[in-house]
Length: 227
Image: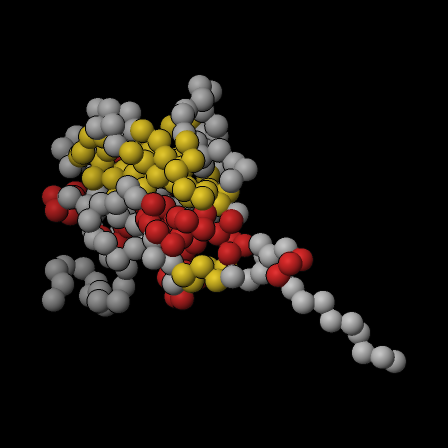
């Protein structure tokens, strides 16, 4: 049963962007308390990259909680598994496997969160009172969660505490951290926590040997057939 207005189908997406006059002063929040962050990335790139969408873009591209330039968002996880599954995404969800070459392309790094920063907690049961449902964390139309990210940023939140799409855990397990777009002017510390193959196995993902790490000793050389 629905309330007033046009009837809605249960299969319709219900989550909407925040109203222009929405007051977020009382939105549920949580603080970072020196939490350890994890992020899976290419081994030749830095972890602290604040992704953004063009200021005049429609929000179709980019990440779920990306801010519009000149602001940006950097995504971190609570665990190695969440970090790895977010990076590998669709294929690993379907097969729970990854080729060794793909695993070797990445590493999982860790960093310490700043203490006392306020994050909007969209997993809090009270978030629905402000118009935020669980769809915000899973919906494919990123224009809506990006609109919420902009509203949270304008309200002074340091980011969003949420649950990721490519895990089955409903509890909060990730952080979208707000900042200036691009690489921070002041370097932020990070350290390699796991190599990609170890991280995948630790996450329960089967690593398939595709021969990408094999040397000549792994192969038997057979002479070509006589003409």
